[in-house]
Amino acid sequence: MPDTKIWVTSDWHFGHDREFIWKARGFNSVDDMNETIVRNHNALVGPEDDVYVLGDLMLGAAANIEYIKRMNGKLHIVRGNHDTDSRWLMYSALPNVVEMDNAIYLKYNKHHFYLSHYISLTGNLEKESLKQMTLNLFGHTHQKTNFYMDMPYLYHIGVDSHDCKPVLLDDIIEEMYAKVKECKEFLDESSEEE
Image (cartoon, rainbow, N blue to C red):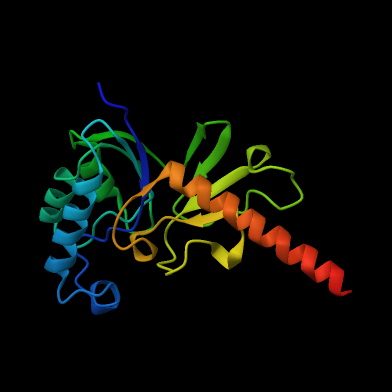
């Protein structure tokens, strides 16, 4: 069996027919956005891969559940602000959904992650290593950058900052370490100037 991978994503907003969603993402219509997100996802994610989806999977008509059914991988869903009780119930009936919760705590390669729809302050730069703190992966903000306020332990995984694709957890870890280095270099330069 090939190695399975861990992916993280959020804010698909399938069926959300508002220009401020699909046009801001560079699409000509909500249908174009929906199909591109499915195609991008399935080009990367294998059927046995784990995918953590941090909220706001769909809006609009119940028929939009069909897009989620088409997504590869075993879906672990965190509830977002648009995931109403009726949508939550629909998600629970999908064959590709293996876990659903308001937030998920995940240990991976000696790193500790708090997966939530909303930003959660979980760490600081006083620690010597990212392995000594809980790292927050979040969605919700629709920001175009990966880090919230340039903090290396607050990582946005929404499709808006990742070209409408899921992100490999190993790549997120690498980016976080690079951001820690960047922040420490900045702090060192600032203290030298004083």
